[in-house]
Length: 184
Image 1 (cartoon, helix red, strand yellow):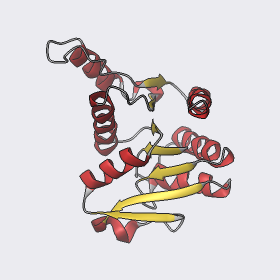
Image 2 (image 1 turned 90 degrees about the vertical axis):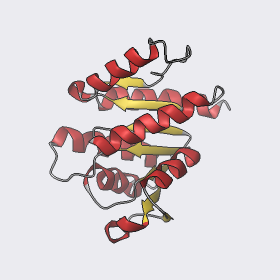
Image 3 (image 1 turned 90 degrees about the horizontal axis):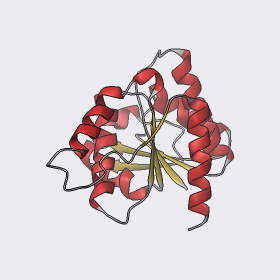
Image 4 (image 1 turned 60 degrees about the horizontal axis):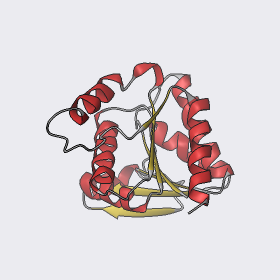
């Protein structure tokens, strides 16, 4: 499975976030999957990539040209894109599942773009798991629910993301997605 991970590129985050990224990367690598991520050597992105690398998984970075100076040496393969929008499109096209770890506006943008793309395609049931640690994304979740219940949604379920509170729940949901993927 190719698993796209959207997350913070900020360094020096509290250990709980580092642990979550390490557990995710370890799961990806141990299960022989490929990490598809933003490709930079920073923050939770690098921590996840390091854990994938250390456990034998493949690390595939997708990076805009203007970030090439920040490319992570852990990338087994590096795809260069024109810009951030091109990067999102490429990551969405390559991924079999998506994980959203805590992050800033860029992470939220990637989540919403992925959710929007998957919702438009009625037969696209790829999973999106959101690590909503300590309610990090509660406001975004409320907005998605409000939008989905509004007159503008055309009856679509806009909030098809699977919410988890911690690393253990994240791994539990990944195991379920892996089983479903294996049935295809």
